[in-house]
Image (cartoon, rainbow, N blue to C red; front, side, top):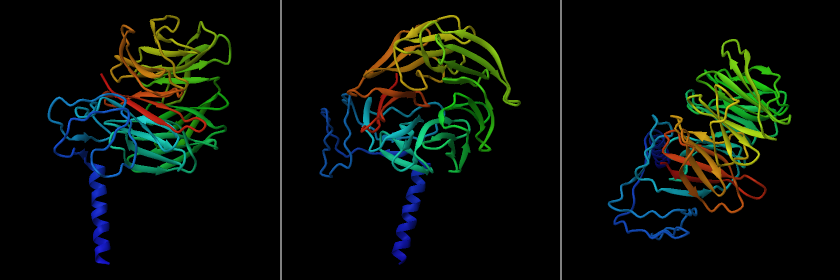
Length: 382
């Protein structure tokens, strides 16, 4: 019996150290120069537990340092010096959502087990799981408060998960959750299926109010406290911006413009609040100045069939989107292509993209669709 308890405490200690310290993966010595083909074949005799297909050639030019996987929360820099340049991983389940963090860590929604998974795409390790009551759907993460918002499939509710302490609260609405956008001070905007928008207090885990807006898509600029609404139920569609008071919850209409195409779709706003990237029904993506939505600054060639049109770096210098079958990064200022990475996704299109929180990696996910699980594709940036 004493050996059983000793094993338990050793295992527990190992888990706690892995949760608090970086994960270090040390290559076997001596290290041969790898020749990477389409499928990666282990060089030792241990049978592989998963298949990892490399999509780029990585040839070491010197001594290989250990692959260091840092923490999922970082101060704005990814530890990517020893990471391979790109790759992808097929998941054994369909993910209902996706949030990129730091150093290869991502938050995924496992629709098979109804869990949120804190997962590293490089080490293929799971740090934590959070059990939900229903399959996870759309997701949004409040980095400042470590609050994850998750739509719960088959219900009119979302789950608010505190990643720091594991506390989960359920917030209910009159209709099911379509999209979630993080606001100010622990608040979030929720587009529900009747096209109205609800405001929630994520810290308290409660709904605050509901706005009668015809919102097909929405996004939010927290720096200037501006809510953007895209109404494509009319033709041509209308884009509106509202000033938001986070204390009184009041919305004040500031701009309302007709978008000069038959349909507009998803929107992404730059962190500095100067650019609104509006997706059309086909490429390209329009770059509108937030101060005057009647003006076109330029465009980026890409397309995403989701609530977002793409993602900006934290300094608003680069814009990431998808152009089948790859990921493309553009300069925001010049609208020129900065990086393009092509993957063999077959007929599966990217439906979400994102920069890592540290800005050193770009991600795209395909699926889920009928009979197809989620695949995660990634590349170092720049």
